[in-house]
Length: 411
Ligand code: PMP
Image 1 (spheres, rainbow, N blue to C red):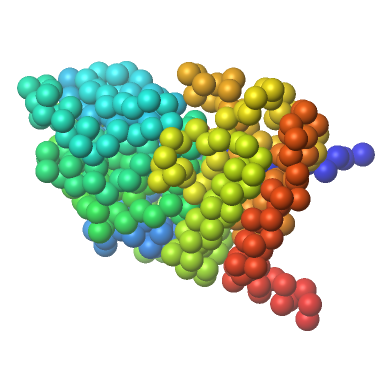
Image 2: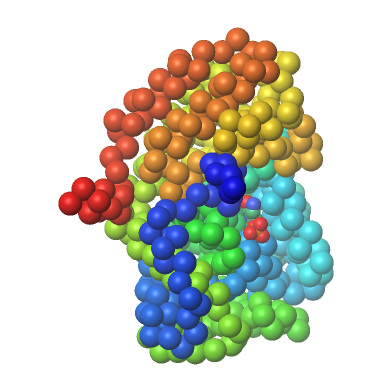
């Protein structure tokens, strides 16, 4: 007998929509198949819109994870000996620093206490203090750090990078399409991501959009250049060809995932990017109210630092990591801590992609957490915790794709 899998509410991978699942579940097409070419081309065009990128920027989609997308940015932009800046907000910023060091770069890290983010002012001051270590080649920052739930504001950092002649690189793995990012408006250079988070796809795709300035920085790379699979210059002709609806080959694309990508990005654009982000915002606000009722304090130290896409929540008195297993026993999978400094004192819940268009799934999550807290001895009232979700249900009108499906099934 196959058991029903738990509802996947970790910060990636996430639940995917029926439309994405259907696009994925076909016999693998060749990389030259007309349907694949069309899907690839339309996905690249959709990325330009979802990233708010200018016409000269180049989208890339490569089989791999978010870490591969990070490696691509580092490998194409940084040569041994390059001074670079990392705005560090947690586990994934640490990973970036490690990558940069392995590449032989010399990172200057600007950090904050766990749960906080360095202010623009602090970054400016540290750059000034260390001005003799520059000029810096690039500035790296994590839009939403999945280990802490901390969201930074990329706009002032992109501006700062511009002032210092650095290219700016933002890791949007836990943010893209759930948080606002205006690549052209902010004049940012690289926004990288992966499929399995707010884009609402299965894992397996590394994606990024790269500015003309960053492509020029690759062209004038002062080292031996990136590893072949990472090289924007090898991939660019492939991306240009597919966007013109011609087949091309450098390394075999994950063809089923490209079909799913095209379907998923179409759903986002059908709904409208701004509406989609507003939906994430409303869901996050309702969930924050629910966590407050349950005495679950957020790891981010100020409300404006709390991401739309996940909640990182400290265990209340008398509760420990066994809560995660209790929640799973109620059919919902949430995640344990990840940041090494606070690993055993908090847990994480993802709320991004398809799940935020399903208030019933968010309700199930809050209910499972509330009942598990009660099982663990906390005096909580699950009904009170669910009240903000009742209000949300009224606000979250169904996404267009869900409306169409509902109309179809009732006809
Ligand atoms: N950056 C961030 C912000 C992430 O959340 C993750 C994945 N949790 C990664 C990078 C790495 O992505 P992947 O696990 O797909 O390699």
